[in-house]
Length: 366
Image (tube, rainbow, N blue to C red; front, side):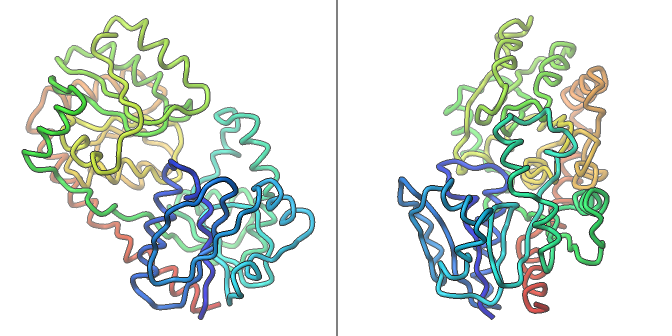
């Protein structure tokens, strides 16, 4: 069976969890060779280096607005015709598409419906324009990254649960406890001399970094707060809050961290603190557990499902609860060791190979 894989989520110079999912699931599907794959990508201004190896790569050079409008309003061109034909089409994220073949779509989260105020007007318009309800009803099968996202799809769009399979992210290769040399290198590279709590992800309202800074102001632990990740929408107030903090000298912003340094940075932290309001999965939580880093996580949406009893779950709206969890982890070496042990065991339950196998069975049924 020939399956067309849509690689548009990794066309940007930098990408978040959706891009990581797209890259890793594509790598695994191609490596397992259960089906024949062709790869669709579109880049108007630059030539991306994809290097997937044993698969046909079809790069088109159309302005995204033109391509998306043609898909949405003309129903043409059909995406499989741009790639020499296919028996099925797989979208690793909600997107514009026109196809005459069976369609499989992965849904990462429906936060743009649950919490529209967390998104810019441009992003809200984009989500409305792709018409997610119609796209998912058109799909022959749907993959959700968590049971929580699956429940949201059933509730919001009235789609039968048997049409939805859970295909979670796996542990990214290289995400494991770092050795002494790597720990020393990353501390030196970022000037991390003291113990530190870490946030890793995009800086945007949904992630509740403002609440994290307020909680950090309340604790007495002799530690820094390190915030690593790209700037997102409405992030300026986070930097202003950090500057006004009584601990402003202990709050560090690293910006985006290269993939090859993430495991060491996570391994060096006292804990990953991720008090997000809503996540479809929460990939940094899984990466932290795989590195043996204690996790303090919001308890809502999918986060409790991912972390289970391997971390401390806190109400993201309760600053005292977040602060108490940080204080406890920072002060109690025995607690940190236990959370490390549980996290490493929990991370073993998630693998790209298992996820690829579920998708392969979906393709085969089509």
